[in-house]
Amino acid sequence: MDEVVIEIHHGGHWHEVATFEKWGTLTYNIDYVLTYMDTDRLVDRVGVHYPISFADFKHTGWPAFLLDLLPAGPARAYWVDQLHLRDDEAADWPLLCFAAGCPPGNLRIASANPPKIIEHPGFERNDIIERNIDFIEYAEANGALIAGASSIQGQAPKFLLVEDHRGKWHAEGALAESQVRRHWLVKFPRGKKEADRQVLRNEAPYYEVARAFGLKTATELIFMEDSLFIKRFDRKVTNSGIERYGLESMASICEFNTFGQRIPHNTFCDLLPEYVVDPRQDLLEYIKRDILNLALGNTDNHGRNTAVIKRPNGTSALSPLFDFAPMFLDPEGIPRSSRWRQEKATGDPEWGLIAETLNAPGISTQEFRQWFTGQATIVERLPDLMERCGVEPGIIEKLTIRIIHLAQTLRDAESKTYSAPRRAT
Image 1 (spheres, rainbow, N blue to C red):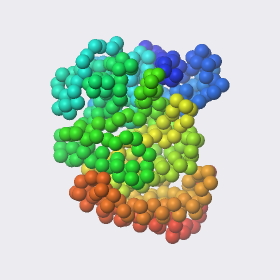
Image 2: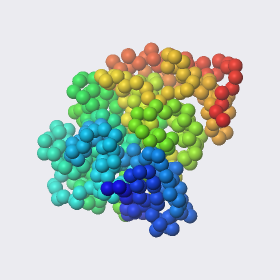
Image 3: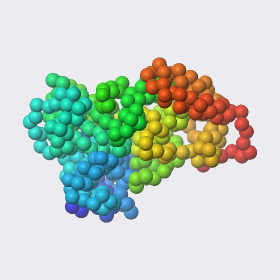
Image 4: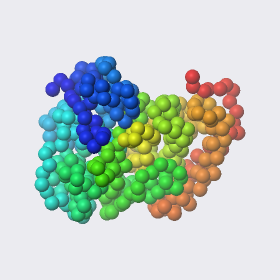
């Protein structure tokens, strides 16, 4: 195959929206352009940088949004094996062609559409928790073991599942949509060490800390016997069918089209306000997430662990928080991926300098500094908040000194002076 057909879901149907040639040209379908060019909403585009038009979009590589559709981690290894590939860069194209049929968000590749619906009675929740061999074989055969967008990137084994109206569990795409009650992401520990299990079982209480900290969150996470059940926020079951929300990673919005690139927070903060309805709110939300990541040791903060959600009504915003856990405990040692350009050699952000680089409607540099200082008091209360939310005492103990130090750096944002302004142009 030298080209793929990209499909998008809205209005209750899948639409053939564009083609992408292997050598770098993206073209919208004529009928789609005639229908949607005048409105040209973000949710109807394949990516925020691709307005609906008759133009050919030419690239030296791939459009960055396509990387959001590729499987990653154990799912990539599974598909590489299934397609008899060598796991290198050359595998990306066949993976796009045949393993990107049911990713999160509202895009898919037509040639990778899920197999025909197979009649199956479904599984009990305990079959999933126990990782019953029949369930594993069924899930793999139906493409449930995948990782195709920012919400399910990473190394932990994960399944995209749906629950029917009888409480039985199926692979997403293997059940008629009329029978779907809820959509789920189910995660298991990254490895077999106690630290791997500790990271996973504290993800649910970490999520509640984030909620109490004032961040955007979805529904409560459910942890049961080394299994984490997460209700998905990119799907909504309605009386007229399933709504699929667009989901585009910040790495894609920044047009980073290779994996592993380290993107400064400043770059995210420059671009995010252009693609959300409430730039002020979402920019402050983004910064506050980094403050909490620093305080609680969530080092896995790369550009595909943050996304913009594009809703069917045409609005767009920073998506609810996801993949938020005590990753500083991970046995593999995961360093912070995204950092501020204004950081000391110790890794401490210089919040006062950062305030001078930020551009948000109606917020001056001094107001940003005051806002940073105001966060210090909230950060200082985190150990008590963590205890109330059920974070394990050993984790709280390990993080207390870090939290106290971070609070002090935030207070310094207003009190320190700098020799020259550094606001981005």
